[in-house]
Every structure is written in C-alpha cells, then in structure tokens.
Length: 452
Image 1 (spheres, rainbow, N blue to C red):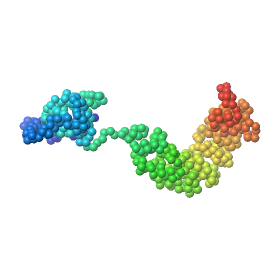
Image 2 (image 1 turned 30 degrees about the vertical axis):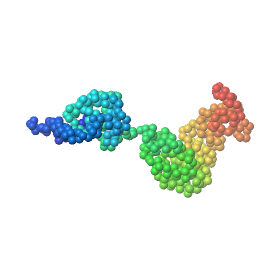
Image 3 (image 1 turned 45 degrees about the vertical axis):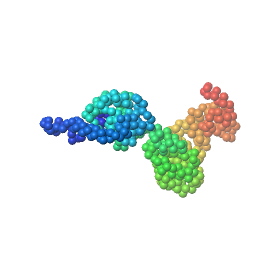
C-alpha cells in the first residue's frame, strides 16, 4: 500500500534530515534558518541553465532533438515495440521492475507542471531535479490519494504508477500466507505438494495430522522425498501403493531413513520375511516410526498375554500390523474385560486372538455393549469364543438378524443341527448377501423388519 507518509519518509524523501525544521532545536533568528524549497529552486535553476547550454551545443544533432521532442513516444516503443496511440495506456519498466501502466489522461489532469517524462523520473526517485511547483503538485496529488478508500478502484488507478518505497531493494510483497489450516493456499506455488498429489497422496487427509503440514511444505521433493520412496519400494511397496502409504503415515517423511532401517532390521532379526515386511508396510506403516524398543516391548506384551509362539506372532502381525502401534492401555483394558469381567479363560482368549485379533483393538465400552447383547440372545461364552468375529459387528444388526432367525426357527448356531447359521454371519455381509447365504429370500427378511 502506497501512502503519503511512505512517499515522504521512504526512499523518495527529498529534503535531507539536516534541513528539517524543528521548533525545539532552531533559533528564532530568521537568517539562521535554511529554506529547503529555496535551495531546491536554486539547484533547479542552475541545472536548467546547464541543460539549455547543452541543447545549444547539440543543436545540430537531429537524432538527439527528435528523442527529446518525442520522449514519450520512444519510451512506449522501447517497452512495447508498437507505435503509441493518443490517449492509450503506456507502460514503463523501471530498473528492471515491471510496473503498472501509466494513464496519460490521469497524469495530465493532476500534473499541470509535470510532463510524462518527468513523472518517469519521479518513478525513478530522481526528485533532486524537481522544482517547488512540481513537488507541490505531488503533495496535492498524494493528499487526494489519502482521502480515498484503499479498496476502491479509483485508489488503484491513482496509485498505479507510484511504486512502493522499498520495491527497488528486492523486497517481494506477494508473500504466501504465514499460517493456514490447509494445503490449498500453497499447492499452486509448491512443486513438492504437486508431485505428492501425482503419486496418489491425499493431502486433505495428510493435513489432519498434527504439525506434519508445516514440515512437508518445506521439503524438496527430489532431495528429501525421492530417497524415502525408493526405500519403500525396496521394502516391497508397489508404485500404486506409495501414495496410500504416505497418506496414512506422512511421518515417514519426517524420520531419517536410518531410523526406518533400524525397525526393519529388528523385524528381520525376529525372522519376519521380506514379503511379510512389505505387506506390513503397505497395510499399516505406523510401526516404522516407532523406536525399536517400543516395537520389541509391544510384541513381548502380546506374546506374554496370549502365550503365542514365534510362528503365531509372525502370522498375526504380518496381517494386522496395526496392533503394533495400537494403544497399549486399551489392549490391556480389553483383555481385562474378557478375562476378569466376562470370565473367558486363558485358552479361550488365545483362540479368540488368533481367530480375530482386531477384536482386541475395539473400544472396551463398545465390546461391553455387544457382549451384553449376545448375553440377551442367550449365546454361550463358548460359542462367542469360537466365533469372535461377531464382536466386530453392529449390535443392532446382530439383534435384528437373530430375531429373524428365531422367527423361522434357525437361531441355534449349532453346526450339528439342521438349518445351521454361523454366529459370525450375523455381523458380516450386506442384507442381500446374508439372505442368499442362509437360503432365504430377501423379501421375507425385509417384510420381517417392517413388522418388527
């Protein structure tokens, strides 16, 4: 934003500081005061005489005289290469900086004693050659600008040829937003963000992770990200899955490769194969950013809690690596719920974990509600232990399907009896597939739901 104050106290300030008049520091003697305008007038008069003298000397030079007489026209030709048209908008390039166009009609209206060429000198901060009349017109012009709304079109027009006081110092004023909650404000200016999108990264999901956006915006794609992508490929992640891996775990970009290598090296020491590690990273790579000690402690907890052998450990965690990074306290609470409150014994818990490990990643309160629902359905603990997948389904859906099976006389869940229906099927599949699986028309089930 340009203002009268910036014009006077920026790089355009004409009167030297030593010539400022201050009521507190100047004597009352009039002869001791120096009038800066008078000094400028004398300087201008002297420079004018020198200019006239030089014109007489170069009077025979036709080319020079034509340049002086058609200065505005030649300025336009130099900048655009086209012949100027009367009343059109001309553009200038000052010290290599592209400026807004000059409106000749606007200049003629507000500057009666200043030519267009002199306005160009003003734009170049060449004020020492200005007369007091010219400076007074500039003061009056800036007074008019100060009265306008800075957001108005007229303000933009009147300040279009007035560059900012600091522009020739190399300061750029089109800064990006210093703070933002979205990558949207930066993606047009960031090659790194654009290339992340090209490999399949969902930036709308990444920006929901705390603090990581501020780090990613400063990364160089070739230097900082390409090595991580190549390492993920070496681990067995396919090209089409790289974007998904970074979307679900952008913190990989923050950790050094040697830290990732240390976790992978630990898993290999526990006899996890390269194929297992590749699947684990693709499915849920959060364990890669954990410390080796944390991974070892978590695996040891599961092994002790359920009495698992090495092969069982590798089989479970290669399919469900999310359990490695899952909250330790919640897993312990779920184990306490099953064992101490509902009475599942050690062998039942082991069987449940091997058949449905994700049941131990559910919220304890949610599991409590589902267990109560199964208890009301008169399902035994032994049946639940044999079919732990039923604990992953919505308890309302399980209750409605159980009521329908009870209506048609098939709610016994005993594989040795006729019309057997798996208890786990109550929590899986869509209604259409479930009806097809148990051999009942979907219309019968829908009619039952309407009358329930």
